[in-house]
Length: 267
Image (tube, rainbow, N blue to C red; front, side, top):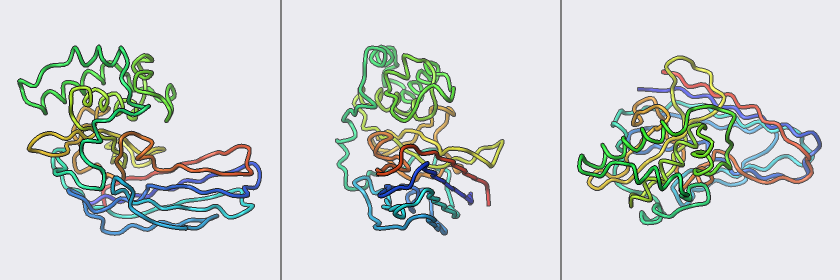
């Protein structure tokens, strides 16, 4: 399936910014199961200072804000050909060793609730894939999908305690559970073509687990499915912080507002 994507982020500051530098992961790469036909990124109110691959083989752009500016717009648009591989990405690639994806992080550190969830999970007698889908179901039952209750700093254990969250929380809890059981697991962020609408106000998140003889396999806990031809992978990492579409620093502005517009549709 060929998908057309438009993504615009507009930052506004209530006073002039003397210095600002953003780290952007919004450019997908050709990988197993997806081919980038074209992709263009435009910056208004700043400029691209450098581009590089990070430790997870994500494409990163460093964007500086114009000195004294109060607005920055980052717009990207492109087409991606995606193959339905039932979530199977295959062999591990990138600079980060596979064993590192078994390491916990502040956002995925297990607590009593997460350990209880894992203790109640099935064994691997029906196979790793069946086991992982069952755990995904447990996570989905434990955390109702309700925007507005969590944010990008919410930890997996806190989301379980709240009993509600969004795709990022589902991914973090599932990743933490998989790691407790000995699987390398990572966070994946990107785009999802919705069946009922084109316009979206945020990207999507899911998880990937490394399974013997298959390699990396994706699990979208929120939608109870392994990623298919509607998904475009942009960045991966140990958790949201390593795969976040934007992070950075600024001086000289007391507050910031952000408007995001994303459109994903079949070409």
